[in-house]
Image (cartoon, rainbow, N blue to C red; front, top):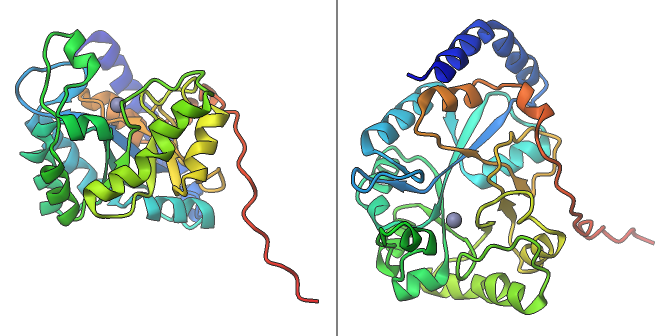
Length: 286
Ligand SMILES: [Zn+2]
């Protein structure tokens, strides 16, 4: 363990009673934190920054199952909207769609009936073309096929959209790009999988990718929410359309630090600037 992680662990353990008290107080008001994790690839070959080993992933799942309720994105949103969160819970997501996930991670989640939302980019699914970031690293890792995604959906995994070509939408407000990457990709993915698509995850998921035009395109496509990936908590009372995610960090001490509710993270969370149309108001009877 690095010195930094040893310090983090010491601080986490020392602040444990205070953190538990904070969570208890939030839970008593129906405002317990709701965590949404994102993973990319679970495999024992070609380790990289976006891969976690099978053993380590299984350790994460064991820990989470023992400490938290495991829920889907729709239930997470419901609890945020209705301030009905009386116990911390976790939702699991994956981005990109790596073939190896169909060998270990997804079967493990299905076996334990753990809800999961799995975000893919339609062009990569259709062509089998590896991601640019893997090609750049010299390791063109295999991506999921349509058949693998259909099998996952059959097993209860929800498939979500991660754009058409895994484009970086930072600063993009070009209507043609948004049409191609989001608006048209939603029915394209729905046709491929044979199911309705409800959620979207912005590639890279940082504040600069999450623009007003991008969020508007997601909303106009009829989707029920979008995911960021810069590390933040879902607390009841906040905007539920935006699902804030935390990295499923292979470093267990960092992951636990997030999942034991580190309130200092709230102070350094970046602010997103977007607005959505108000939901239609019922017409008052005359
Ligand atoms: Zn991605």
